[in-house]
Image 1 (tube, rainbow, N blue to C red):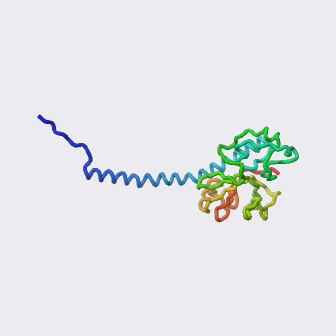
Image 2: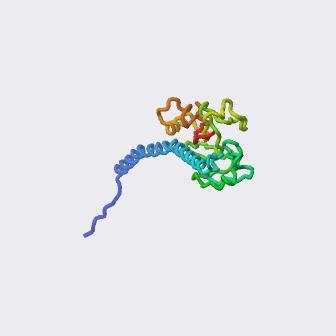
Length: 221
């Protein structure tokens, strides 16, 4: 007696139903994944700024109060300059020169930051929202909300209203944020209950969102 052969496969109706189920699942899963990816951007900016802040404070602690002049100093051991000494502070955040005394270089225990950046003052680190975190660190007048230097045709010019005797911070400059993005980052850095977002706390930014300044560590006069 001959055995009957049975065909195994999907009927047209089963195929249509299966495709419909896959499409329905995709409609829920894909937006969820995309939203999670997008929501990670401000968190990355916040995490990167926090990491830089910790690195700056560790650097300053090891070098007995000397502040780094740029992010690159946190990653690569700085170069000793013989003209720097106990009476000549060569941390570039304050004196705007790049170099440290031999004694200070000997105290460097980095790298303090897990990143890579060149020693070019114009170099940037990329963060969430594709934000540009500038290599050069500057002083920031926390009372007046003014950085020490303002851009003027590409040259560094002193900002009007900056007062060196006010409480100062080592500031990280962040570019390429929109007003909405800066607001979200501000909420993560300073909390959602801040009375004047952008004008107080550790994250400062204009109505346009850029440039923003993160006050990474206080400067002791």
